[in-house]
Image (cartoon, rainbow, N blue to C red; front, side):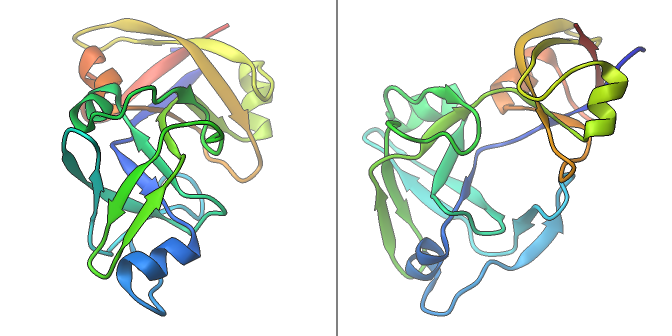
Length: 191
């Protein structure tokens, strides 16, 4: 397989500000590393899950660290429908302006966010060396072919290039289920 990339499923999760961590978990609380993730410096926390409250329901979600400058909730379309969150756009991580909000409930408090709910745009993290080898540039849009039991080609995949990244494509749980992308799965970048 040419231009091979590991495909990982990114389940629903949230990124929190330091202020939100203290409100949700209590004064002086910090995010505790449970497991390091594939992207350098990123981790799943051992902290208790946070409950998201929408107009139609609730969902418990994991918290990823480290803290960020803005609160961000990453859902699949199925999750957004279950919560009753209308209008959650497909966006790149960090692009939360003008998005819907919701309530987050933790063991020590609640935080209402006016915006921050997105459906994460499918993307590939890569180093500059990976990008050069594959022949792509930062923000370039590509396709990725998966040869699973339910093969498909993902279109509109954004390449995110930084020396702080490790090579991996991220899709959400709806996309994973549609492709049958379970276990260790690799895709082929198509230019």
